[in-house]
Image (cartoon, rainbow, N blue to C red):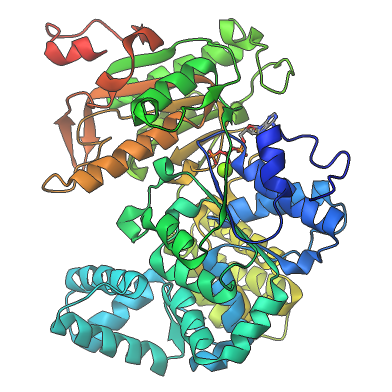
Length: 579
Ligand code: ATP
Ligand code: MG
């Protein structure tokens, strides 16, 4: 039995409240998009601290991106004023980094180890194994897969892996995968260390559990004893990281590690209109399951707009024209008042709009069109920040600065030197701003150069995406996970773009593309636009595309066809009937 503090859990519905109030032992929360999983997780942690006297430092929360971690910290600060600032809220990689910074010697590391970036790792392989750049890149992907999943490799690959690891060790470097693998090794070798962390983190919560891979599950099982206080939250229908070794078997592993764990289900979709929830759950097949489909909270509203443009440029112009209409207020949309929290919505701004696509390159033409129209946007992907040349340059300049001054000063000086040497001022300034922000976010234990460089190695473009800036968001579908926007455009609904094709067609890959589109659709709260182009610039040439088979699976009565593009230049063909 638990005592529910008046107030704190009042903002949850009965299912959510019941889940938040289960505070002892292992708990799995499974539910669809927009059902309040993240909200429940956050309130549950606040409830532990406020009503059960658990120390904030004992509540470890693991999110999928650093941006999601920052957002969770903010929410917790609002719920627990003054107490959430130092809560351990991490991604798996930043948690691994923190463990290695504390106990790296148990994994054979010196204190000032460095996390090698993509370019450094490639150069290392080229040097050590005398390979071409391309071969080295391919081999790195195989090495990475082996490190993450323990997948078997042939003798040659095993030999390459051993020599690569040895070369890393000689330089006191580790790679991204070691951020999980080395803490596991350190913990497995030292029961005292296991006891220390189990004692420190009495309650562990993991959001987006469906995208956790084998090695991360292993790390979790070291941090939490069987039957311990582990709460994992996820939605198997939104698993989109199979290509990186995650798979929904993490749910089986959870049950295996924690037999008899409680399972809670959330039922209502608070995020999206009835129209969007219906279309999305029929698409993913939730209807046909034993499990009931999501309960619709919000009314059926505007149909989903489908739009076929003659080209990718025209697709981008369509986005601009629709945004103009939406912001101009002459759209029926701005008078909608059917939000789940009962508030009427006001005018919409740029920040309410997201443009989502399968591959980052698709955003170039959209960015150009928005810039031409004078519309502010922010573009972000999960590409590592260190891959930005202006960043991979500023870091090199930083290495030549003396370490006496504090980090912001060192960065400032390095940037000035670059400017003197003729670096492009705009990109140098952008790089400086980003790195300065990373330096500012370090807590005092990490605020030396080694800690800073490690944090930079972990940073992705998406970390700098500011939800409050009044700009249109341009995001890859992967980077949009967990987010929501009143207005969403999903672009490039073409066969070969979404679903993307990877050589011979692999049913598992197609199923993952399907979930990726599902994630995209379910980001939309009020209005959803599905767009396609008949031809687009693609991998260096103009390529004609057929409509995505996914479009044909959206119920016709939930779709409205927009015809703002110029009349087709040729007779409509069979595929056009899909739209
Ligand atoms: P995803 O699977 O996309 O990560 P989620 O299940 O984590 O989704 P949340 O992001 O937590 O869902 O919630 C979706 C939206 O619904 C948010 O705007 C949230 O504030 C709202 N919401 C959740 N629960 C309630 C509730 N009980 N009352 C009103 N609004 C709610
Ligand atoms: Mg969520």
